[in-house]
Every structure is written in structure tokens, then in C-alpha cells.
Amino acid sequence: MGRALVAVGSVAVLAATAACKAQPMGTEGTDGQGRSPVHVEIPQATPGSGGGTPGAAPAAPAAVLWKRGDSGPGVRELQARLRQVAWLFDGPTGSYDDLTEKAVQGFQGKRGLPRTGAVDAVTWQRLRQMTHEPGKWELYLMGGQPAAAPDARCLTGRVLCISKESRTLRWMIDGRTVSTMAVRFGSQPTPTRDGVFSVYWKSRHHVSTLYDSPMPYAMFFSGGQAVHFSYDFAARGYSGGSHGCVNVRDENAIAALFSQVRTGDKVVVYR
Image (cartoon, rainbow, N blue to C red; front, side, top):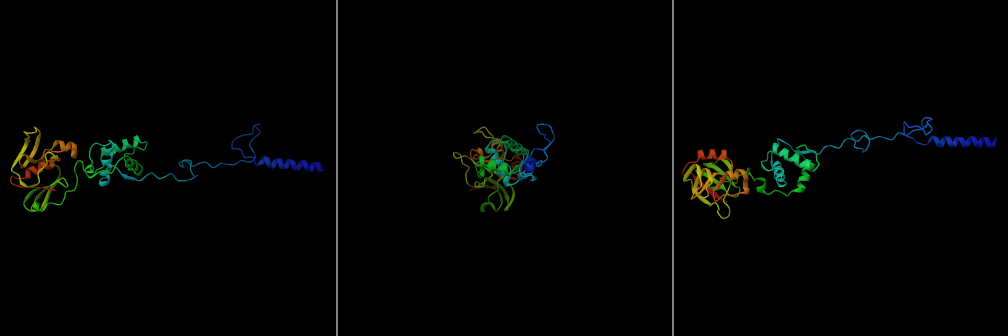
């Protein structure tokens, strides 16, 4: 009788022990006699959770800072930095155009980032790490900078008011600014003269006899120095220079200016 009770107790212990063994669902014992009486379900990652915490929401995409159609100083800095790493050759203009979008896509693809063409925080951080803070004339390489305050000598009469500090020309009549445009000046060996002058000759299709180079819309004010349109300035921006003349980059702007300026109008060149 005692032996029987021991046997029964041993069988119960074995059964309880066997019942606690976990086996994945859908598997059978090695003898093919069915599933284990107890199974444990292991939590599975939910779709889109990236294998993280079960049920966790997907990580939010990086915030977009600038995209096509945007404009402003931030876009101008972006373009200047893209130029530093040779992904953009035009500008900076301050306007996020198709060329800027393609440049951003190229930069992103080269570095394994999503090729969205829009600048998010991740793209911007990577670009900043690879470039230096742009200087003023990197930001305004092709013009677009604000004009300096006019010199006091520009506030009366009809005046071409030219600031070397801001590299701009204001066309002013009786203290009112009619138009403003970016200009560049002579290099160190042939500087543009400072002072007060007057337009003494206009030549629409002028060609320099000294340098054999075109000087369209030339308005001469001091010897051979003139305000005129420059193809080189239009193409290269401030990376070039003149032989003493005041170069204008915008052909449409100087064409309109040429039609308004008269012989005898004042020219003020100041720092």
C-alpha cells in the first residue's frame, strides 16, 4: 500500500514537471504524438515598430527646414554651402529653385540619405559638418546684397550713387532711389577712383580699344572709367574684377538705367 502511494506521487510530480515545459506553438513532439499541453506565446514586434518596443509608434521623420519654392537668408546660406562641396555652381540666389533641389538630391544620395530634394535637419547637419560658415561675398557672390545708405552728396539732383562698401549702385533723383543694382570695381592694380564726377559720354555698343573687350551700355565718368554691363561679372560674380570700371551684372537693369541717364548727370563713388 505504501509503495503504491509513492508510485502515484512520483507520477504526479513527473506530470507536473512535464506540463511546465514551454514549446513553440504549432510544433509537435519528436514522437508525433501531438502538442505539449502547455504553450507560451512570445510577443511579436508590431509592423512598423522596427523591432523595438511592441506597439511603439514609428519614429517621426526629420523636420523639413527648406524645400523647393522657399526663399530667404537660410536658403542663401544653404546654396553657398552646396557650392563649397561642388554640388551647386549657380547662385547663391536665396530662392530654392529646381537646380537647388537637384543639388540637394545629389548630396543626399551620395551620403546614403533619402533623396527627397528637401533639406531636413539631418541633411543640414551633415552639410554643415562638411563646410565652413560662408562669408558675406560667398553669400552674395552673384549680387542681391542690400545697398548701403546713400552718401550725403547723392541726395540732390540726378545721381549714380555708387558704394564700394556694399558693392551697389543706386540711381537716385532728388533723394529718391529709382533702382538699385549690384556692381563690382577695379582690381588693386587698376582701382576705381573715388570722388564726385559727371557722365560725359554714353556709348551703347562700346568696345575697349585698350583691352579689346566689350563695354555695352557704357557711361563714362572719369577718363576711361565707365559704368557698363559686364559679361564676365554676369558669369563669374565677384570672383573676377574690372580694370577700373564699375561693372553691372544685370543686363536688363543697366539697359533701363542707360535709357534714363543723361550726359551731365552726377556720379558719386564712395566707401
